[in-house]
Length: 311
Length: 294
Image (cartoon, rainbow over all chains, first blue to last red; front, side, top):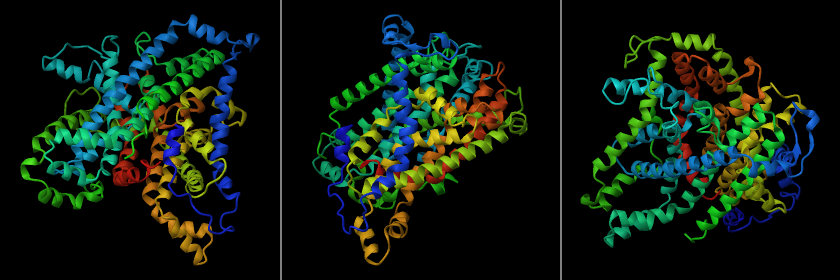
């Protein structure tokens, strides 16, 4: 991320034209509200999570509270199969979701970037689920997947599948069912960002390539894709972090079930702290989740050589 | 409605001309390669919307595939009996307060980042980027404790602050990008004409920031409107809750009232869909101007 900050620096730092117009304290005054809010409501909570991860802390069992050393972490790595299961599921969820969202989002952006009749309407409709919340997405797909009146019933009427199937309560179908529901809302995010970036590809490049007789596929591979690379890297990373952390959809759609089949690590953490009141252990889980996220992000940025090309 | 408010970005006017003269006709993308995949995808997008409309508008127990005879009983029921009227007011309050707070705070910070070099700048930028990795969902417990200490549990203010804080970093980065796109010399010229920094900013920079501010502000509103977890955790009074929490309550009932759920969903979606329809073109210009350089 430090790299990104360096890249983002403006080429020419603003000059101090008049001493009176730029008192030295002004920038600090300007960032103070933001800085204070973030210190109080992000930095402090993060530090307290680190602190509690070394404690036994359970408001319902105050007699056991106190310093725990690394006990929480030992338990986590050595004696908690649920940690491993939920982490594996989180990884699977993130990879499948982000991969498919990128694929469809890219295709969609390329299509609606063409000139065709009805383009404005097409764009507006295609992007519309983006604004829909996780909870509302769940509500919509609960209606669709409902065994009595859902789409399966009408499919069964038409002779496809059988009556009474509920995709959300069958362990063998719940994963694809949840993936599709989240795709519905997630694809427009990529489509919009990629479409925005497509606006800045120079038309001359394509014209030159055409003169040289390059096929459209070749133009895509050698002009469009390299141009989009940084945007793709950054948006997949942000989306992966977001998909990892976001609990709205799965919490309301499946509640982590059936039988824990769709419990992600954050969902497990929320359950541990909210239902079981085991704040100390939940904090240890959170700390590990942070470290994993940070590590994966750094590796991803390094491997993708983000910001490395001069374009 | 949508055709008129979502015109294609800037280049649309120039493009058809360029396409006709610049490209040979055989080289155009065949129309079916556009319309076939687009139609398939549109089906995937629109059927779920139709489905929820259908459930909201047809009488309970009906299995008809068209919402006829049409009824508004579900809306009446959900608005009064399920207190969606109250939730709606609360959500509007949270959304607007978050919008204002985020925009003002991010504007100040973004200006500092765009226009000054100061000692803590790099560190601050790094903190902004790192905060993107901090999941709000994992900070529920410490946040709950903080708000309890401030006696803000069960007050909408706690949700507004929490939403704002997590919205701030990205908003600030975006806004500083927008400000950087406004030449500093414009401001300097205004100073020469006798404006002080604030006036110069107000009359020279602010009008040019409009697309950016619309993008950032609407983002903040929509996020706060949609977000579920903070409201669920910090607001226990039924009279204080927001629409997403109301939807979750409907869904987790033992026997889900599908009609009420669908009507509640439409109420939840309407403001957001309208906001997005209006600001879509600003979003695309806003992002292509700011995000890339962010």
